[in-house]
Image 1 (cartoon, one colour):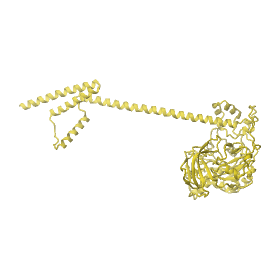
Image 2: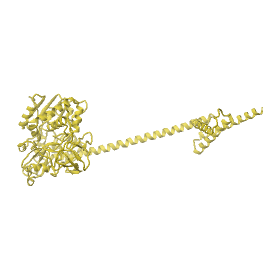
Image 3: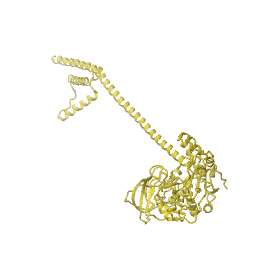
Amino acid sequence: MRRVHDFHGGIHPAENKHQSLQQPIRHAGIPPQLILPLSQHIGAPARPVVVVGERVLKGQLIAEPGGHVSVPLHAPTSGMVSAIEDRPIPHPSGFPAPCIVIDCDQEDRWTPLQGVADYRDCEATELLELIRAAGIAGMGGAGFPTAVKLAGKPGRAVKTLIINGTECEPYITADDSLMRERATDIVDGIAILQHILQPQEVLLGLEDNKPEAIAALRAATAGSTIEVVTFPTKYPSGGEKQLIEILTGQQVPSGGLPGDIGIVCQNVGTAVAVRDAICHGRPLLSRITTVTGDAVEAPQNFEVLLGTPMQYLLELAGLHPERCERLVMGGPMMGFTVTTAQAPIVKTTNCILAPTAAELPPPPPAQPCIRCGLCAEACPASLLPQQLFWFAQGKEIEKLEQHKLFDCIECGACSWVCPSHIPLVQYYRASKADILEQRREHAKSEQARQRFEARQVRLAQEEEEREAKRAARKAAAEKRAELAAQGDAEDPIQAAIERAKAKKAAQQDGQPVAASVSPEAALRQKLAKAEQRLAQSVASGEDTKIVSALEASVERLKGKLAEAESATTESGAT
């Protein structure tokens, strides 16, 4: 039996899980309308590939990935695209965001699908592309694109594959019900992940408060290399870094990733989604979501289509609106308040909590910190929450980063134990957002600086090239002047052009081209061209050295011409 370890801190809040486990998973059916946010995952939003008025089939691609860290989006049922516009989405900001709206036709007609006959005959890269094309993002956490996470860094071997079935947050039982009812599907998905990653070991970890799920998984993994590991219940055991420490005794380095120590973690729901995509060609269209809280008549788990309005699901569970204090997406520790029940179910919606005022009363006013240190004792990341709180209040960014603010997993344990009721996590989230915004601005400034410097280098190069051309032209002119000074003021290029013109003109007149020209005629041509070149040089204001050289050349040609004419005259007299 594998030895399990413990992590620093942690708490034991009331679990409140039994309420939603009294019934099996229920299919929620098809609502009249689906609202599908283009950003349901970490990374770039998806880009629509459909237009308003277009009819779509179940499983049809409706939005393509917006970048490398992104996933596509598919129609969860058949119907017509009625709008592509901003709608309310489940997000802490409460701001609307771009969504594709589908009016469902209730026919649930599928687009043709095709799975892989045998995944063992496929290369890992091929399977990763199928997972990416299926739009799968992490089902148990922040929704990081699964294919990107599985691909990791090239050349980095995976020692341990961990399947997370912990589900430590109070109230939430989506994974518990999935493990109870679909353990075989989970194991099939894990086998595909094993084929892709080729790990040395596979550990399926879950808390000991799930006896039915443990029994189902042990039966499904019998005879396989998958080891089901149970450990004492403590919040937040389901945190990725905390689970790694529990199962392996290793700690992920500060600011690092599990891949840095040869570990990959995936949720049990993600494993089922991988199985559906590879074996059946089904994209991610639905998920298991817990609907619970004292304001609903029948807390239970639903298999619900992505994009289903929360109001539709709450009505199925028997919501009593007059008793509902607020709506929370997620659990009471890490969840956030949803501003409207019209917000849709997305890929990361594991729970909708509808508590009464007595069940989750609003926190009392915050009091000054008494430096009791309880928050530091509870922190599972071994941070100093009280120090981070003071630095956050003073907006001391450098000190926040020095004290490893970004190692905070925002589990809420510090706020839960604080006797002064200080909303510590809210301060940390705000500080993280401020720092990330500053980093983005710095990155923009750095890009602008690099573009400016690149432009300056380019302009300098262009000026150097122009200067080189000017120098070359000047050198050529000086060379011609030098040749002229030596008695041949004729530009060789221009002379060739003139000879070609003369030859062509003679041929057009039907006259034979003269085989030779008399010396006097040749000298007269040279003299005429030299005088023309001299006149051009004077008119253009060329260097005086060039002008002087051309003048000397003209005088020499005149002398030669006079001598030639005199010799011809004397020859004729004799």
